[in-house]
Amino acid sequence: MQTQSNCNRITWTFQHPGNTEVTLFTDGHLIKEAEIKRIRVDANCFLVVNEITAKDAGVYTCRERISQKQLPLNYLSVIT
Image 1 (cartoon, rainbow, N blue to C red):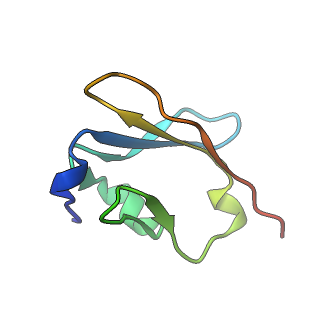
Image 2 (image 1 turned 90 degrees about the vertical axis):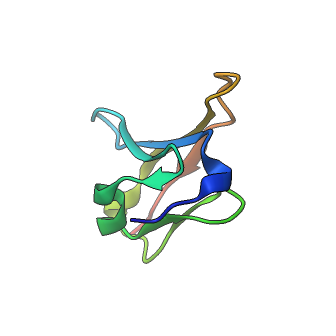
């Protein structure tokens, strides 16, 4: 499982339209299910999705835990 110690305050979540939000990355660790989706977090705490498919479309949200401030929403749309 991937660890990014410099990103230990960051949480990345994903919500496919109509579904519940799921956590992809938190406490410096990528959630195991996220690895299956070809997802990683780089050294700058950016979410990287490889080999994007239509199933990856949805809302990706980054939150910083210390301030509980929600950073801008990041959207991904995939056209097949």
